[in-house]
Length: 58
Image (cartoon, rainbow, N blue to C red; front, side):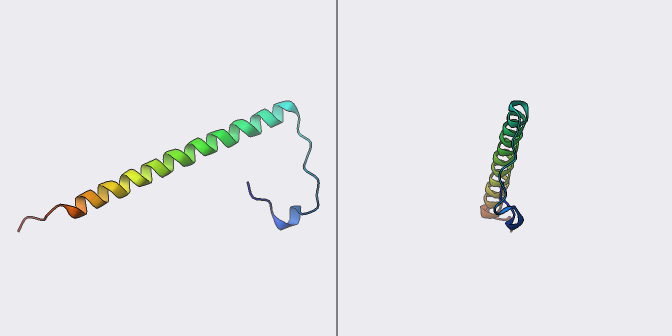
């Protein structure tokens, strides 16, 4: 995640092993959700493009 300007100069918080594992798991879930969302949007764009390229009946 991006750090705010207000975090400048502050040391990183010390996290326990459990907290680090939870943070890592949360980041992995977020990454998977972002990949799924991107895949869904690309599929929607491809479907739109395919339907736009079909000739319309006269």
